[in-house]
Image (cartoon, rainbow, N blue to C red):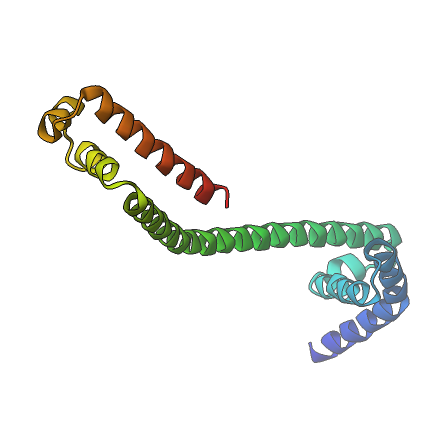
Length: 179
C-alpha cells in the first residue's frame, strides 16, 4: 500500500513537471498576469491530484483536457471576481447611502434651523403692523375679516399686508434654497 502511494506521488510529480509549464503559459495568456496564472495552474493540478483516474492512465492524451480544464477555471475565476466586485459595489453603495442619509438628517436639521432663523429675522424686520397682521393670520389662524375687525382696518388692507409679508418671506426662502 505505502509503495503504491509513493509510486503514485512520483507519477504525479512527473505528470506535473511535464504539464505545469504549458498550463501556466495558457493561463497567463487568458489572465494576463504571471502571478494569477501560477496560482490558477497550481489549482488545476491540485484538483487533478484528487482525481488520479484522469491523469494516471498514460494512454490518454491529456493536453486538450488540461486546456479545457484551465479555460473553465479561468472563466470561473472571472465569474467569481465579477460577483465579488458587484458585492463590493453594492456594499459600498449601501454604506454611502447610509452615511449620506445620516448626514442628510443632520444637514436637514441644520438647514431647517437656518430657515427658521431667517424667517424670524425677516418677520422682525417687517413693519410692526404687517408683522402683527401676518402673525394673526398664519400663527393664530384668524381670518382676514377677524383681523380687520380686531385692528379696525379694512379687509382689503389686511389682505394686502398679508400679501406683502408673504412676498418678503418667499424672497428669503428662494434665496436660501438657491444659495
